Image 1 (cartoon, rainbow, N blue to C red):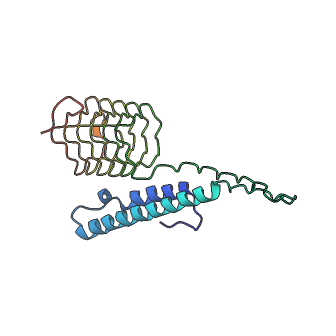
Image 2 (cartoon, one colour):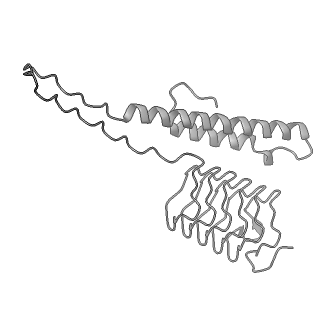
Length: 222
């Protein structure tokens, strides 16, 4: 990912964003199958590298930030015969680790939550309540948002590439600048959602499945 040894988690995330922007298939001519395949391979390698680095960083931080167990100081007085042995301290409980990348967050309540710039790629957020949540610039590549409530959510420039948004509630959501390429929006409700500036469409919908979706103007996509 073109990173120096010892790069921080923030630097890993920024490098991932830069490389995804460079190698996004939408930037490659559709009729150039060789470059399209190369872009797909690059994205796969970038995702795998990012996951490995995130895993190593999380493990490193957990190891180096957990306090060492305190040891008892040896007693300077000798114990008499038959005297009970000193009681040993119980090992301190370790801090709970953060949820794994593939954690099941289905049905969770994140209404009005600030999730801007978070990486939710691949997470299961089906039927979660994200109404009014700030999801601007959030990475949600291949996220499962089936049946989720995203009404009035701010999805400005959110990456929803290949996301599952079937039957999702996107009423009055801000989708300006969002990338919904390859996403599944069958049966989704986009009534009143912001997708245009005047007559200009400002949402990427390359390969998006909109069958049966309610469009912002209330019409049903055929």
